[in-house]
View (cartoon, rainbow, N blue to C red):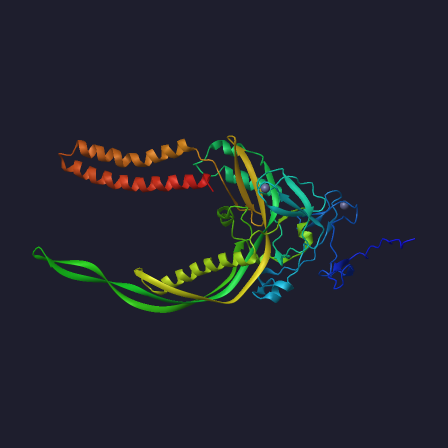
Length: 427
Ligand SMILES: [Zn+2]
Ligand SMILES: [Zn+2]
C-alpha cells in the first residue's frame, strides 16, 4: 500500500516562498501589511440606524431618531500637518479612510469615489452615468490630513442655485422658474496644498521714457523716446496654501470661480465628517500636482520680477527661480455637483459646500445679446450717417467724427458682451 498523500493546507496568512530544493514547497508567513487599524462604522447608539454628518447642525445626526453625536475633531486651520518633500514623510502619511467605505468606479468617465459601506448610490456624480461598479475601498490610498466640513446644506444649496439662475440679463428669464436640480451630490474633492519660499534673480532690458526735441519742416517738435539698458535684481516671496485640485473630473474653470475657501476652518481628518457624503479619491498624484503648483508659483515670481523693474517697458526678461522649504498637504474640500435641464440640454453647476458660492454653465438668450449689440452700435452709426448727409456743413464733419468715436466705443462694448455671453455657456 503506497503512502497516501495527506492533503495539507498552509495556515492562513502563509504564502509560498522560493525553495532551493526541487519538488519541495515551502510556505512562510506572509509579510505583515501595515497594521490594520480599527475601522469605524456609523451606527446610532440610540436606535441602531445609520448616522450621517449634518451640514446644518455640524454634527453626526441620526436621521431616524434625531440623536446627535459630537465629532471630537480639532480645528487645525492653516497649521494643519504639513509634509516636506521627502520619502519618510510619504511613509509617515496615513492610509485608508479610517472607516468602512466602498468605492464606486464609474465605467463611463472613470471617476472613483468613496462612499459609506451601505450607500445606495448608483449614479456617477461626475457624469450622471448609472454604469457604476461598487468595490472595496483601497486601504492603501493615502489618507487626507485635514478637511473642511460641509456647512451649506441641500436646501441652502438649492436656494443659492435658484438665485444664481435668475441673475443676469443675458439669460432666458424662464431659468427663474427651474425649481428642481436634476442631481445634487455633496462630494469631498481632493486638493493638494503647497507652501514654498521662492527666490528669483532677474536680468532684463528696462526702458526709460525721455522727451526729445527734433527739427522738422522748419519747426521744433517733441517726441517720446525710450532708452534701454540692462538691469538686474532679485525678489523673494513666501507662498502658502497654494491649492491644486487633485482631480480633473470637475472643470477647473468652475472650481476657480467658487474659491476662495476659508482654510482657517480646516479640521483634522476624522472619518465621521464623511458619513453620508461621497469623497473623491485623487486622480492627479502628488508629483504631477507639484509640477502644476511650481508652474503657477513661477508665474507669480515672474510677475514680481516685472514689478521689481519699476518700469512698464521691459524686454528680454530672463529669470531663474529657486524653491526652498517646499511642503505639501493632502486635504478634502466640500463641493456640491449639480445639474439642471433646460431646452433639452443639461448644464453643470458646482456649489462651494463651505461658502455657498455658485458657478456653472448657463444658457444664453442670443436674441437679447444681438439686440443689446445693435442698441450700443446704433448711436454711433446714426450720428455718422447724419453727419454724412450734412457733410457740406461744419456740423456734418463734427457729426462724422463723433459718430466714428461712438462706433468704436460701441464695438468694444459689443465684443465684451459677446465674449461674456459665450463664456457663460461654454466651460
Ligand atoms: Zn437613532
Ligand atoms: Zn462618471
